[in-house]
Structure formats: structure tokens, C-alpha cells
Length: 126
Image 1 (cartoon, rainbow, N blue to C red):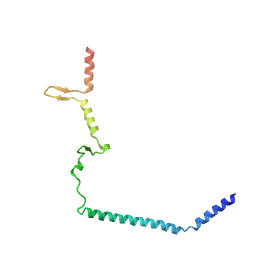
Image 2: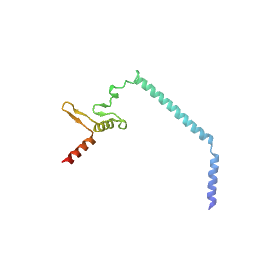
Image 3: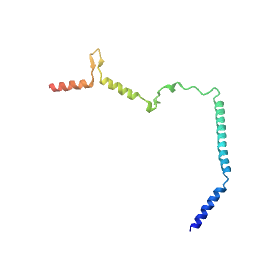
Image 4: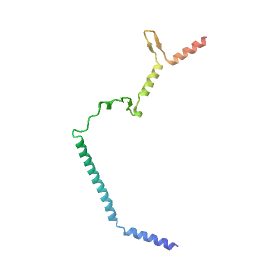
């Protein structure tokens, strides 16, 4: 039983030795060259077509391109939009600071922690 398997292995080895490796490598090199020439040719066609369609060059960007919102469409990239974080930081700073709500009416705001202490003291007196 081992004789047919060995003869098959010998046939494969002989076939591999008889391969024309220079021809196989030549076909590979020729394929790469054809691909390169096709790439250069298609790039040339693209550039010629672009120059025919836009002889003065590409049109200028519309002025809305620099805006973050055009109409009702928000154009910011969500990962880069920091407006919500900045607004939240301003809100937290206001909660921890003193300031006027209405100076003429004499209404001021105080830090939340101070207001909570005052409420506890006030409720404790009752």
C-alpha cells in the first residue's frame, strides 16, 4: 500500500522540478507592470477629464462650509463637539459660586452646598 503513495510523491516532486520557474516569475512581473501602466493611464484620463470639466480649477467652497449649522443640519463631528461639556462645566461653576440673579431686585445666588446647609439649619430651628 505504501508503494502507490510513494510513487505519487515522486511524481509530484518530479513535476515540481520540471516547472519553468523563469516563465512563472516573468508572468508575475508582467502582471505588475501592466497594472502599473493601467494605473498611470487611468490617472492621466482622470486629470484630463477634470481639467476639461473645470478649466478654472475647482470651485470655491461655499461660505456655509465653515459654519457648524446650516439650516437645521448640525455639521459637527460628534466626537469633536465640546459644546455640551462646556455648557455643563459653566452650569457646575455657577452652582458653586456667588453672584447676582437680579441686582436691582436684590436677588442673588449662592453655592448649592451653602444653600443646603442653610436649609438644614432652618429646618432644625423649627
